[in-house]
Amino acid sequence: MSRTYQIVCGKNGDGGNEDRRNFPVTVLTTGEAESDSLLLEKVIPSVRRIRETHFCKLEVYDGFMYGTVSIPENGERGQIRFAFIVFKDQVVFVDDTGHVIRLLDKMKEKTVRKNNGIGIFLADFFDALIAEDLLMLTAIEDQIAMMEDQVLEESLEGFNHRITASRRRIMLYAHYYLQLSDVCSSLIDDELGFFSTESEHAIRLVGERIDRLYHETMMLREYCTQGREVYLSQIDIGQNRIMKGLTIVTTIFLTLTLIVGWYGMNFKYMPELEWRYGYPVVIVLCAAIVILGIMLFKRKKYF
Image (cartoon, rainbow, N blue to C red; front, side, top):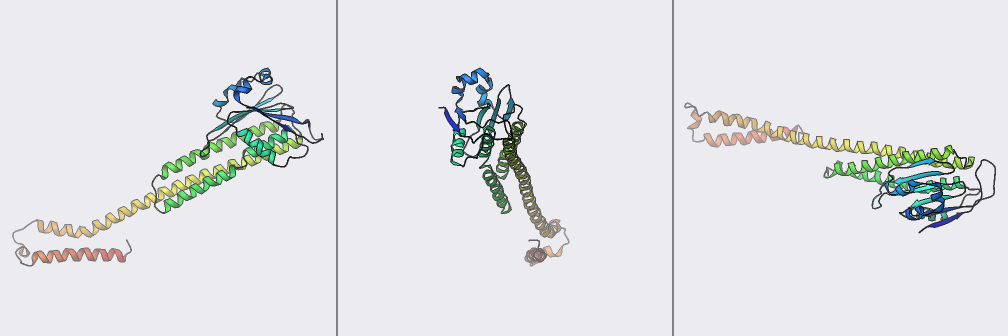
């Protein structure tokens, strides 16, 4: 169902063209937007394609601005898509997920700025949109750190799948923040002259916060790359251990192989073949060679 919020503004002041009068913020579903007389009058066919939106953008038309926001999936929450239309004296959201209503309810709990207007409201809305994202990125960083610790403890099972999923999620958010930053830049340009200087400054501050989140995602991307390098290093270490073990075994038994080959020739004139103690002596000799080889490698700290 639709919901309307009445945003109460302060007194008119200098600093720009923004109208300080109170204005409504309306939240509609897609079906309600298709039957809304104001939207039909402005002819916004894009509203009907919100479910197909996969990116954030802002388009400027004659007398209004139309934007879309597509938030990537986050854990149990699926992808969120909604649109917003900014008029000089009204803001309309089109959302089927209920996310916009939750954000607006949270914004009502906070202290309202003095002398606010539509521009300040949009700055506060985008600020609320990214308010918990730093905690989400921190959780991803902790997850990557935990995977890295598991790799160092030689628990390598499923690492590639998990690190690839984390990297894909990070890149989705990197693209999201980059697009959201472009939306803020378009709002700051204010081609229709809707906002005051104060509002443009507020939107610019939010854009800078979004840019910092983008750079944070880039750092997490590099962290994923470092984690993968640690994983590959641990695999190399494991392979080196295997090769070292095989080399030690081969070296110890090389002399035994020589003895086997020697006595396997069965020459007629080999007196030790007819000696009654020849077989026990060869057994003792082989055992002594194995023990001596093990002691030698252990002394050299090869294992």
